[in-house]
Image (cartoon, rainbow, N blue to C red; front, side, top):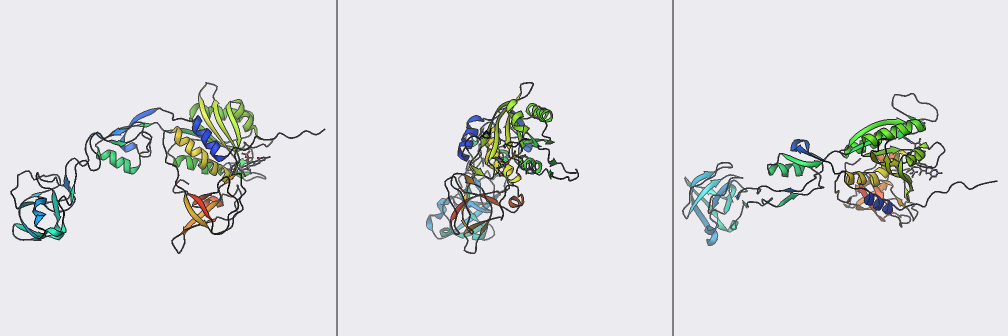
Length: 419
Ligand SMILES: Nc1nc2c(c(=O)[nH]1)N[C@H]1C(S)=C(S)[C@@H](COP(=O)(O)OP(=O)(O)OC[C@H]3O[C@@H](n4cnc5c(N)ncnc54)[C@H](O)[C@@H]3O)O[C@H]1N2
Ligand code: MOO
């Protein structure tokens, strides 16, 4: 008697998986009020409305002389009497007569009634006069307006934005010392597999060192999440159960590698399924076909999202980038902009089967004509980490795409500091 081996469920497309993740996940919601100095890379949990106008006054954009732009009407030579100096932080407050001007420094408040600044280098000076040619200027030149950057009461930043260095500067310019952000996301990671060696262990036949621990915790740390690194957990039901229970109690999300395909030693699948509501997906993509996603429940009824990534090192990284990173960003409350894909000319033929999305690792360069070109990093097996190390981006060969010929345009997603 023979019986057919179990057939796996149909493959989902990359877009279907992305859509399911978006539907199921929402921000963790817990917030905290923190000092601006601790806020870099955190995610704003509230809109920020500008309490003041920036700049707070009309001020000079140049070192020079401030005067009433009406003097430019002649269009020819202008001579003005210099009656005083306005410094940044020390305004000139006295009234001026027709034909008078004030020497002014960059950032100094524009004296009342004056609207134009002639830069020092366009002038010649007498004892207490200054001359310049009116044709070189227009009324209002070199004056920065009050509220030009932000008016009091205007929205400055939105909830869901990340506090970048530019945003930190903007918040500081508004005089804000504290802000409300989402608390850091806690993500537990462990590798599974009896053949996985930790660093420091002696090599043995059939065993490989745990590289996924380093690639995945590295990617997680770069996202600004709090990583709970749980190392390697062997393929033994009791150990797996204990590890998942600890991770579920301590973390908002769990990322694992290995044990999600159909192998005999894949206890991970059974334990994942036992401990919660977990789906095993086969995704129409290469690398990275098998993946688990769902929610686990600890003995104490605490819940955590689970992302079970394939063990093959490149598959683990690519599935992280395509699915897990955006999913965690969503949990963090971060409304991340969609990645900007570049178009580049492929300099080599690539075999591509329609019906799945493929992500060859690419080297993107500007050629001698200034055009972007891309080539693969060589052999593309999903165990070849070297293909990731050499690359500066992933080609994105979409679901329907067939073979690529030399010169065809392909889309590329640059790593851009993510990896
Ligand atoms: N009958 C089928 N077999 C396989 C399928 C399938 O659809 N049907 N899918 C293949 C694909 S694609 C992948 S990817 C792998 C994923 O399998 P698992 O997630 O169960 O991973 P393992 O079997 O545990 O390991 C696969 C491979 O990766 C190495 N590995 C695992 N963990 C690490 C680590 N932490 N650091 C470095 N290397 C690691 C492991 O030694 C194996 O070589 O399944 C295919 N099979
Ligand atoms: O996910 Mo697997 O590594 O594509 O071969």
